[in-house]
Length: 289
Image (cartoon, rainbow, N blue to C red; front, top):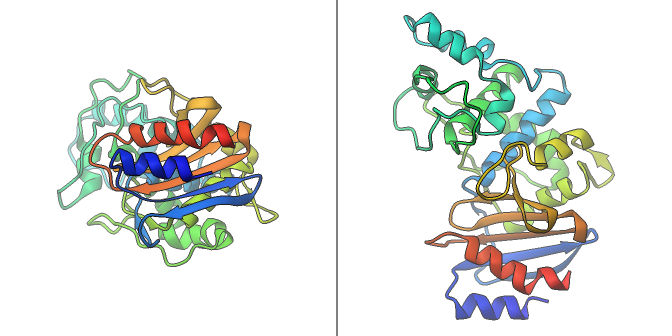
């Protein structure tokens, strides 16, 4: 199954670490160009943050249409105008999950207090519900989970998600305040990532246990907001063939293809846009599923 894929990878000089293909619940193909180990997922981390939000909502900690203001009242710098508080009150958890806060632009934070910085950002476009990809939104979403559950994110996810998937001792990145970054920083192996995709393919069920509700899986992976790439759910990208994917910079991807009952996970180190790699998958593997 992977012979043509491997040939194209070599021919096009794609720096891919490895690939795992699951079909009908069974691993049908696997190849590692270099030995498998845990590697940086980059923005695939966001899909784990989204999943934590879904679990916390199911457990009743908050609702998707809750305003973020009530979670951060003690973190907002003193003296901000009332108009800014009103604008923060318009941002819901759903808007964080759909990246629809226009004023939260993309960027890596370097200040000493990320929360105070983000919560101070002016919001003149708060009423414009349009897609604006940002690490700030996913950071806030993760912090809300930690604040409401009163648990470190990995401690919260370990019994509810990670252990059932056979994942232990995950390395993560944290903010200066000690909160889970939420946007990037997790490290997993390709096989661990593929099991995460399989969980979503099976509508939240894994090894006979319902870890996520079907309603959450459907909501998180369907198009919630329009993008130039074809749509975005709750930190999942819509993709070809009615599929969806968790994607990270430099070619980390887990593609879930319900119509083929399949999952394809790849880890890479690509200098340029990883669409070339994804197209290679679509040309060489997808037709054989």
